[in-house]
Image 1 (cartoon, rainbow, N blue to C red):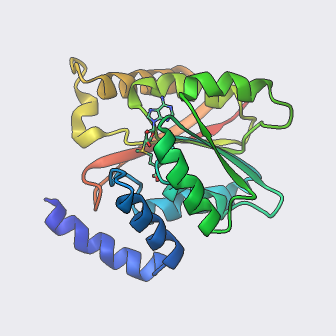
Image 2: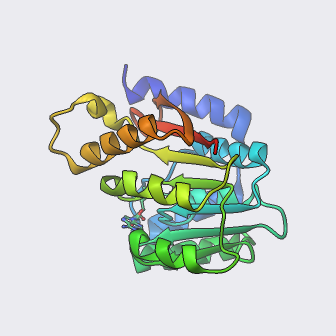
Length: 223
Ligand code: SAM
């Protein structure tokens, strides 16, 4: 099985269930024109994030890893008018493109992009009155820090919050306990943490499609 087979299925499902979306298409075009890598979530994954936020009734969302704001837009669209989303992005150029994309999408009043290393920004968010707790946290940045990001997500959430981590299968490499790939090591450390954390009830699943062979972890904060 290859992307040659997976892509038409993604196209079929996307056409049926996601549909054309001018704002999101422009977001991807502007990101590409600015030279950003094509590593945003796929449309059907963006829709999943949007649905999870709506099922949760999320009023506050935290994202770690903005890129050009594609997943940010999917998530921010799930918020009520008085909702709030903070997205953290290390690369100032990515953040600038994302801010322009959010403004074009008419979502800059609910979604804010903060520039810097997430592990520097998260302690500041914790001290900021009214910033959290977050009803949904989406983790999609440097995979080596995934365990630390889940720890922060727990600190900044509440019972009933949802934590989603992207790219947790890594083309199957996640099962290689001897891997020297920092992204695999970081993802396995994150799985170990989630598995032993009594306040989290989680599952993970493999995905194939336009983004290759990967997967998502979805966790519910239970206490
Ligand atoms: N969530 C985005 C989407 O689906 O549209 C894609 C995010 S992309 C996979 C990962 C992003 O995380 C990149 O823009 C990268 O610059 C950013 N990043 C990497 N290390 C980071 C860090 N330490 N703190 C914050 N952002 C980081």
